[in-house]
Image 1 (cartoon, rainbow, N blue to C red):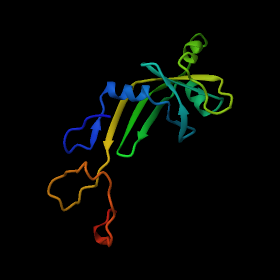
Image 2: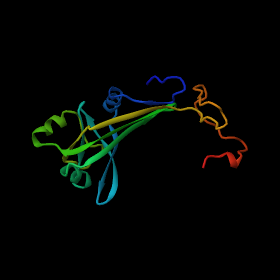
Image 3: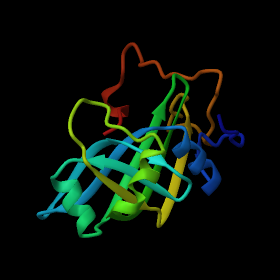
Image 4: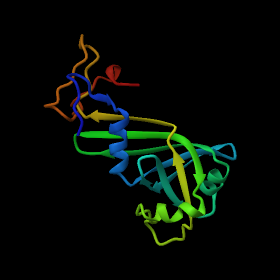
Length: 167
């Protein structure tokens, strides 16, 4: 999916790479503060290259949008040998009546048969992402960090020494 430099299992994605993943994914999690608590909601979305769009029913997400709250949104993907995550931070807004047809044209529809009559937009103030290549965890006694892409999974020791386990 993305090229990593040797011995670099974590790649910090650039803006274009993050946008590519946002365009090709349709689900994520929306997080924000409400009533002194952090709430997180699974959502499906559409991305037009500038904003993320959601549909919602009356409730916490709609109240956050009406107050133009600062939110965080995360989407990710996990494959057998790699994974990635993209995080968006920005303000959430209700979509104006004159823009509803535009958002409908993006193909945004609820996944489940419920009424989600309100459209919400998330402006992208910050965008970051990471891509991960799965591999064995290096042993602490190794002098230098290295990973072997030929051994993509870790196998537990048959008789582990409890003094050497992670805490």
